[in-house]
Image (tube, rainbow over all chains, first blue to last red; front, side, top):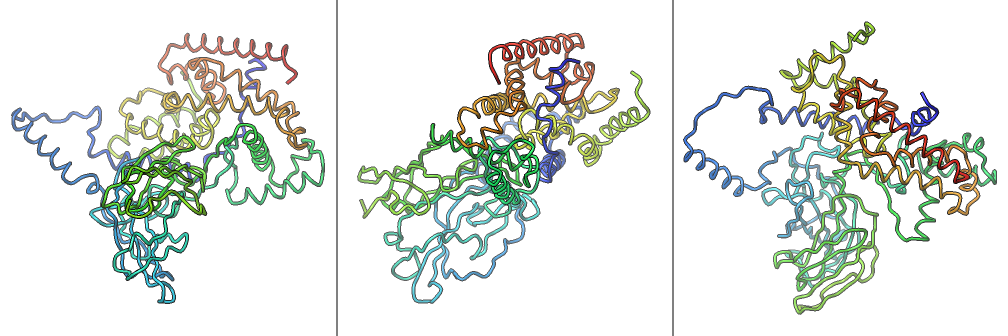
Length: 364
Length: 197
């Protein structure tokens, strides 16, 4: 045994034990394997061999392939009970599922957009809310995963009030039968999401250099504030003082990482964040969506390593949707480039509160 | 090999449980309950807690699929599971190197980059220098040596268990461990001679 052995043994010895999310991940992974096993013969199992005439085998394979294509991936998921439909101040009088379909990075039912039209709270003014979810057989809904619907991996149809997104007031003119797309205010938003397309997965964002906290996520910010106050009161913070801080080592690491990140960002620009989630990291999504106008023919987003372009078809009604495979900064300012049917390109920023995101005005 | 009664009992139970799980998949959860903490801890130390969740889950899913390959005469499933975890980790080596490099960089540069007195005082801590030195030295090892060193130091496996986990002769384990220690010693001497931290 050498001194270096002891140092290696001690290095990173403070890692926290697996939390509930880790246990849920492993139990879920093994449960999925157990569930899948009847479909997959065991490696060492001896299967009875049947002789199938070659022509018949080719015919069966072709039939199976045709069937798979015809039904598509959406039939591969079972159907569960409808999602809750809580009462909402916004009561849609008409719901319009747009033709836009976007694949999920992990496969399964595609994503889509619904417009929920309403007379508004006071009945005098009409409005429109956006609903985003997974689409199965022409119906919007959610998948039972990421801590919702008992992780049953079934499709749960959305009710009229499920998952209404009303980030701002988007008034329309005319009757709320069919949206008057020319009069919907153009908008662009970026929201954090999960593969289920429903709520349920708790997340916290911390600087890229911070390690997972030992305790509950929600305590970290409070502990950090207490720690900062103690540090400020003490002036210089020798290590013995640091040990007495309310947040202990976890809060100090967070403080340390935040300061370091700020310094790096001042010198080199955006440095990065990490998202800790109660659901598997592979289920995290960022949803970028908006309205670029009916005469838009394509939309591209770029920034933070993302560079994607989506053609817009006539049945997309001028709306667009990107489903990215992880959590980017909430409110990331992706650069949007919209191409209009007359060949013009309009560039701008897509972020909450952006006064004028790119948009094809008029009919082009 | 002769073990303590408790070791033999657990080992027998592991083999029996895995055999039972071939007919009843649910029985495999006993293996998860027994060994998940150790595997997760090993992966968390190598690659960070957030990635460890996914990789540990992946390792046990693979173990379930390959349980037919488990050597029934093995004393415990632990080396077998560490072997699978190490293989899973190899697919994510870039993340591990990035993490080790980040740790080395943070603690070396903290004193230079951060103006705030809190950071300065913390960055001066001797432990930070040691952390940076060890992280840098581990990152510089080749992946075979790193696997052996960390299975030994963090997985607490014996040389013969490491050999079983990695599917290599025991002599190879001894030589890799020896080379890894020599590399660490060299890195330690170089840094002590060249830097104040």
